[in-house]
Image (cartoon, rainbow, N blue to C red; front, side, top):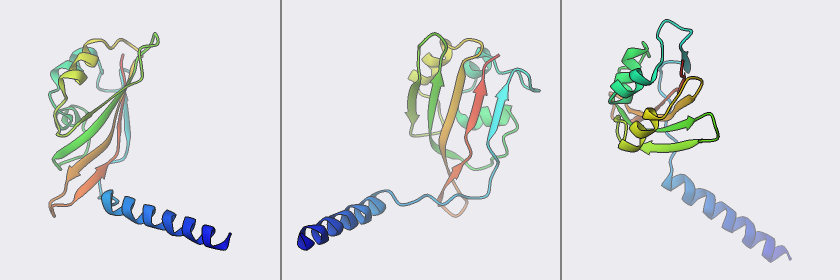
Length: 138
């Protein structure tokens, strides 16, 4: 029994070490705090605004998001009313994918878009996590 427990603990430790080596923690750099944007604020968030934006960096500029670092990847989740969602899509760059643009074409007032797991390249070459952007369509 003691041997089985020791073996189990050793396997768990090896698995944890392997996971940490394959997915090292990404250091969080100094940056902006999470923001939620809606039509009630200074910037009206509409379908047109989303469709015009070609990248997360461009969207950040529209909403005065305090970021000067180039985005290298992110995940977008759309929660659409009427049972169409959530839809989760990932981009390996700062640009919105074709699938993301298709989701933007189908959004309506009250739908929510979450841009999360935003990774940006710091001036030192290290990847940093940026706070998410939450959008409620007006």
